[in-house]
Length: 77
Image 1 (cartoon, rainbow, N blue to C red):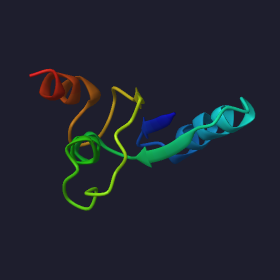
Image 2: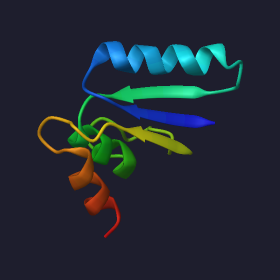
Image 3: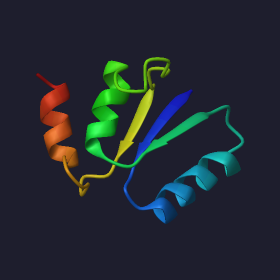
Image 4: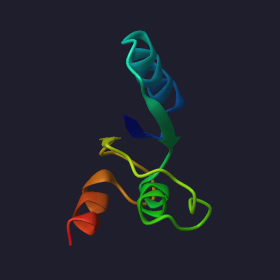
């Protein structure tokens, strides 16, 4: 399963990674730190052309530049 972690707090992102690793599942984990990078990742743009589309996105709503709610509105269009 491909999981995209979107969180601007590196410590929280690391805790999430550790929880997935401890679950013994087969996960491919990717982390981005802001909503703009998430949108680029999902659209395979700006350095993410080889990104694997995620099966699951864990989205922090309180993000810099473009918050999680703005991201959700944009991808739901």
